[in-house]
Image (cartoon, rainbow over all chains, first blue to last red; front, side, top):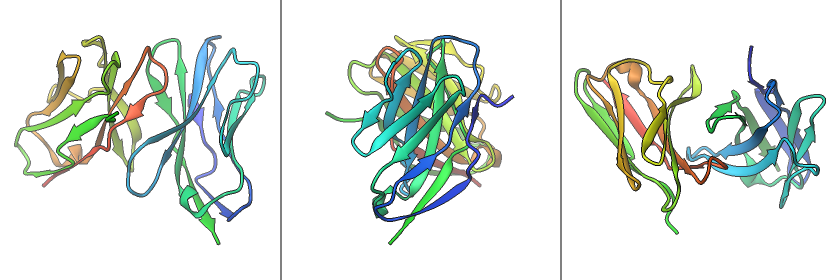
Amino acid sequence: AQKITQTQPGMFVQEKEAVTLDCTYDTSDPSYGLFWYKQPSSGEMIFLIYQGSYDQQNATEGRYSLNFQKARKSANLVISASQLGDSAMYFCAMREGTDKLIFGTGTRLQVFP
Amino acid sequence: DAGVIQSPRHEVTEMGQEVTLRCKPISGHDYLFWYRQTMMRGLELLIYFNNNVPIDDSGMPEDRFSAKMPNASFSTLKIQPSEPRDSAVYFCASSLKGYEQFFGPGTRLTVL
């Protein structure tokens, strides 16, 4: 079974609009962490945001917020006020128990003017 | 502060040759990870170290791959002999106490 599922291979959004990138996860470990990374066309992996399983509030970092719904095992990334520079691949990842991350297959976001 | 440094950025080699990829983690970080990214398989964890000790190498594809971390500021990933199917982008990442990982720019390896 997939540990991390990103069902949207591609998404389009108009500049200045908000967009939600979906991520669901599967774990029986009560302690885990969820991460989002951005990979622009230049290839580097950029850490965006982190949510711990025991965190009571949704994580936010500037225009990025994580919509954490523990019962549904979902950790969707919300990007507000999209910019052209947000066009990239976005990866959801989970750390359970141990220190390694398991990555989803990614969602390619394209922001158009 | 400098981020994770990887070298070389690009490597083109012929099948059968030895390839060595290098990584310098962020100073003070105690975890180091090696990943491989391909279109077919996505991002795969190969091996990771904690305080220079290999913790999990279950992702290393076969005996042709080996990794070392002789000290806290340097790690190598070696492929010997290389094969065309090893062509990929190899990332090194480091973290402090296992939290968010910071990635290097990657090494794009092409094996002809």
